[in-house]
Length: 256
Figure 1 (spheres, rainbow, N blue to C red):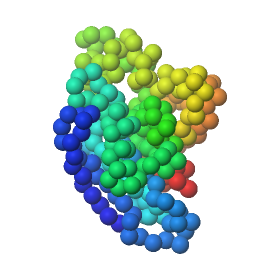
Figure 2: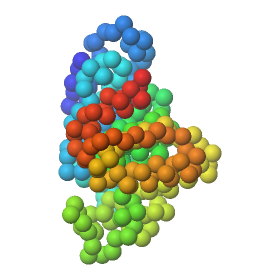
Figure 3: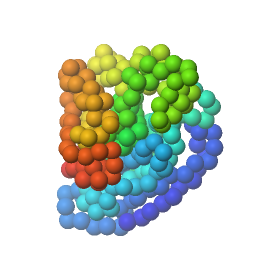
């Protein structure tokens, strides 16, 4: 197993950035996965977190996939309105190109997956829908699918997490967000209208999570649109007790 911390200059963020990477390059397994080309998982952290790998190493070895862990700050993994805040473009374009050029990985959507929790769950679903030619599947864990709340925000408003200006920076003008590429529902409708293939979508959320109803609403939206996906619930709140339990289950769906 090889571990890297890579530093390079990002055009999307207008500065030098780092990302971590795990590569099972020296492990051997008799399983069928060891005989396949190494696949790639982009792993996204949540709000008020930083990039780190919570996927157990044995899973990367078992299923033969690399883990790329970028740092999205508190960006919601979206292209913000100010210079140097193109986090969606970083995930969907620049970073996969860099990984492909430097490590020979993430060559196509069949070999590339994306997964995240909370804000990162939103980011994983959004990025895969914005760049289905890059990502063949996405997992959103306890996803912060809050675009409808953002759409109702007015100047001077906010919540316990951030103020109006923060959400405007990430999502753009709140009164326009539902009909913008920042909204996963808008992206789904666009792909369906164009007759394009959607990525595989997997979701999970704890039944006592404060985001449960948001995830159920997106599940219903996908169901109403006839979009094939899998949604799981189980006892739990918005914490790593739930995420650690469901991570192996989601990894098996992505790579098994």
